[in-house]
Structures are given as structure tokens and as C-alpha cells.
Image (cartoon, rainbow, N blue to C red):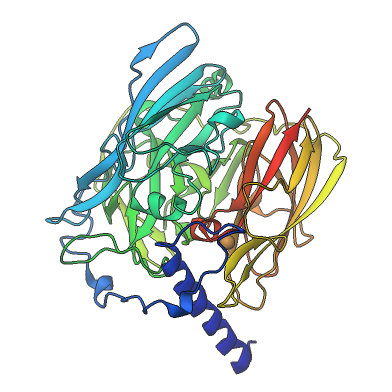
Length: 489
Ligand SMILES: [Cu+2]
């Protein structure tokens, strides 16, 4: 049980975190050179009283949009080419108001890119924003110059071509802004979209496909109820959960199986989801399919993670309404079973074996923590804020490594989410215990609670160069909780 003293300390730390992150949303990047931030000197952020009441309109009155699939501008025998404009757009989040967002091609969430294993995708992103930006393919096994390194930015008015070889198995990835110091704000403003990879082996399993394979982007926001404006301050206070851009939508389904690819694109929020009287069957995680379907009573999905589910509505009569519930927010999506439909999809008992784990030859320790000293506030990895000119780990290509990643913010009770670029990893154990369901499969992002420690194993294949690893609470990364590895021959 917490003593009153530690409770007060926790409250103070949470308040300090909120203040520094609110300040960070408008600060310069936190690097070793720019470490002297002074949140205490900032005016207190308005908490926008009444924000919790701003779900105007009829709950579940709006249909959940499905992000449209982007069409290639050109295809060759081995490559699909796409053009995407990064620009501001006015969208309707709350009925009757417009919200100015940052968008990919005016879409919110961005359009879905559908790729195939072994077939290259090249995307030309044109930056029509007033700010520098870039694009990271989260979970992508990507050459360094296309990875969206936080210092490789696209100037306003400029463009950059990103090449994705798709040398990885079918899975649910997402793309988002990743400029250092601006990633939290730009993703929050709307720079996020799905990138789905399909492969032949997965297709042959005949999981639900086509219009029955639906990506769902979850995130939480705060809006000014009168103006519809996004409220940037305090990422800990964002009461509206959006489901593909809409708060509390409904989704009309046929009485058959669906595949739902869930992504949590929030900055801070972790969602715990249940479907009362319905079954959540997990078939995949961040990096691809699980060995076999797993029936879950609930799934927990932290910022940056994906959970791939199959839900079978066939046992429900037409007219049934089912609510997807989030532990803190309540019902966030209503499924309406409205019709019959043929279903030749399958849910095989076996999906795909995980790749073998080669023996690890290198062990490393990684600790994520904050320095909340008002005179020297920063996010830290192994005691240091991000410095783009510093290589923290040098990794020999082809090596298999075990990283013990710990959350050092025990006293302050702050959760961190560890994300490693370039490769998918496996969770070997969490606090010395075998991985629970949320940690299984191929992973690229894991939540790490205060005092927790997770051992990960990864093999660094194919590409050379500089990649980052960081906290995927992006406001923490913006504050310096990021470090760099260099893959060498
Ligand atoms: Cu963090």
C-alpha cells in the first residue's frame, strides 16, 4: 500500500511530468545541447474545463470511417510508386465543428498503403506544412536512409522519396511523423496512417480479407468544445477516444468473421479493450501472425502497439448491438449486426511458427528514465538525453543480441514504452516471468511500467547505418528519451 508520503511524491511527479510535457509540446528539441528546459517558469496550462462534456451529438450516431486504400501513381514489375502530400486539412471530428489537423493527403487518419512481401514500395512525401517533418514506417525493416531518422527532415515545400523493400512477413505497420522534438506534436495533429503488408502464406490461410479486413486506429485527444480546436497541452488529459478519427462511432457488420487490425496511435494512453458477449481472438501482434489464434477476454494495447484480431459475429442475430469497451473510457465503438453475408474465410488452428531464435552473443542494458529536476529536465536513456551526434550502441550486422530494458522511474511512477527501429524482437521475459499474452509474437514496441524490466532478443539483419530506439510515449522521446545505434559490417 502506498504511504501518504509516497502518494504525494507521485502526485508531484505526475504534475511535473504533465507540466514539462505541456511545455515540451512547444519547446525546441531536447538534445544534449538544449537540455536546459524550465517548465517551472511556464504559465500553468489551461485545463479547459468542460472538455469532458464535449461529446456533442448522438453517441454512436456517426459511422466509423475506414481509411481509404491509397492507389499507386505508377507500377512496374517490382515496384509500386505512391505520392503523398503532407498538408493541413479541416476535418469534422465533433459533429458541426471543424478541426484543423495535419494530414497525409487530406485524410485523417491517413490513407492506408497496402504492400506485399518482397515487392518494393516507393513513396514520395511532399511537405506542404509550414514546419519541417519526416516519415517513419513503424515496424518496418527499412534501409537507414528511408527509416525517417529523426534528424533527416523534409523542409517546407520540399519532398523526400522513401524506399520500402518489404523484406518482412505480412503484418500491420503504421507510418507517422518522427522529426526530433516535433514528433509528439505532429503525430497528435494527425500525421499517422496504416501500412499493411500481405504475403502469400498469410493469404493462403484465408483469414477474413477485402472489406472484412478493417484497420482501426485508436487514439485519444482533447478538443475545445466550442471551436473544435485541438488542445495541445497536457498529454495526460485527453478524454476523447477516437476510432478511425471519430469519437464513439458505430460500424455496421455482417453476421460473419472480420479481421480488425487495432493500432494505438496515442501519445500516452494505454487502452484495455473488451467485447462483452463477443470473443476477441488474437491472430497477430506488431510484427505478424502468432503461431496460433489466442482467445482473449481483454487486450491491452499501449502507444505504438498493434493487435490483430478476428471477431466472429455469425452467432449474433441481425439487430444485435455489441459495444467495444475501453476500461477507462467506456464504450468506444458499437458494432451493429445488420445483415447476412457469405463467409468463406477461415480461422485456422495453426497460423505461422515464429522464426527460430539464434543464440545471442551480445547483452546490453537499457534504462529509460526522466530527470525531473526543474533546472535540467530531460528524458534519458542510460542517463543521457538524445544526442544525434552520439552513437550509443555499435552493432555488428547479423548479430543476435539480448537487451534488458528497464523503467527507472520507480519513484515517479511513469510508464514508458520501448520501441526499437529496424527489427522485430521477441520478449524473452518480463520481470523474470515468461511473457504474458500481450508480449507474445514478433514485437517492436512494449510498455514497461515503473520498476519493470523486459528482456528482448533481436537479430540485426540486412541494413547498415544509424537507427534510433526510444520511448514511444512520443512526448518523452521529444524530451530526449531516445538513443542511437549504428549497424556496421
Ligand atoms: Cu517514456
